[in-house]
Image 1: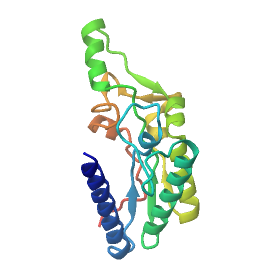
Image 2: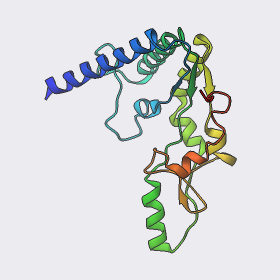
Image 3: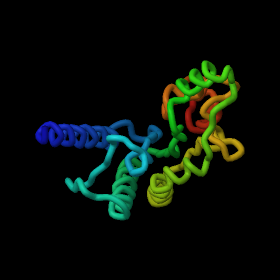
Length: 193
């Protein structure tokens, strides 16, 4: 089992390096838009199997992990920005459970169709370290930040559903109805060829 884990880490690192090399050496000037769920890697309160490690250290946590993550994130963005304009999308809000299943359960048990949301402050707390790294990368690497929060979290509540229709497939992947909420987010970035 240990070999498999090491092999997967080695393959993931090689794959990431290969992608960075392509970005560094090909398609100069083409805008690069970065999305990530970095908050999930850094939030120990979320019970998940996703963790990020640097330099082979598997026991990093707390401040050392946050510092190392920020340093590596900034370095990666700066490396990409050498040949490309870079746009970083702040994390999409994650919901505490599957919205689609939650709406279905609510309808069956309570015959209700009220919408589901999560407080913006929960999202901000969960993504604080990731957003600090994004801010640092934007400043140092001349990247631009794209913020989906005004589109998805009006009035301090992050929408999980709208008008009784789920915006998420699960707790973190937007469906078409969720993507429609982001209309205008990329205005001025994406242009017809």
